Image (cartoon, rainbow, N blue to C red; front, side):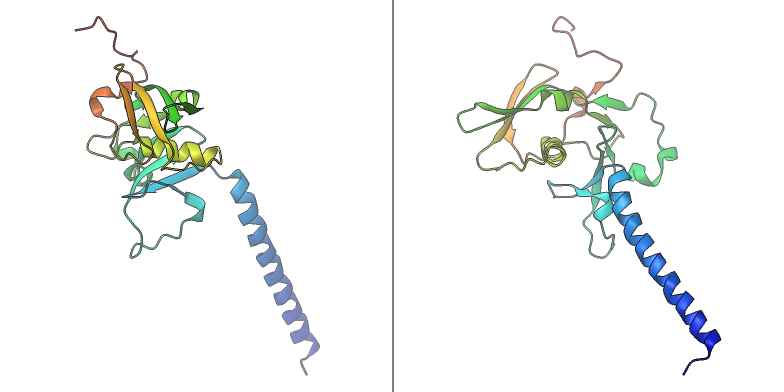
Length: 194
């Protein structure tokens, strides 16, 4: 039998462990609702992973390439997570160079208009680093709107800031080109400029 002093110590130790356990559960639940909605894209994956759910094991993990912060509607290369101070960001925030974007069916009818969503998107441009793709844009729209899309039935039609209409797969992983990225402080190129 334990002495009264030892019983008291064991009781308070168990009490403390229970409080810590419940506090950790409460913290995990609360952090889910108050943490920023940040998603990480990995090399060769079209769907992003929420940051709070990742188990980062460098031996198993694919290479992270791009980050999307849903609260600020901005994409940026993964390398910026490590060191914002190494990259001066003056005039590096760009609008996504798309005037209009729609999800279309096999008969090229618009099923969902993503123009308002795309209009608010931004991208931090770092030379020689990953840039957003149509697949990245559609993926974050799907997650934010809780709308999974069938990639066999639907595709994307969009118009670039240069006026070019493009029809591509939902999984198009071609990076948006530097020459059509539109800095926030500039207007789209005018048809008369040349």
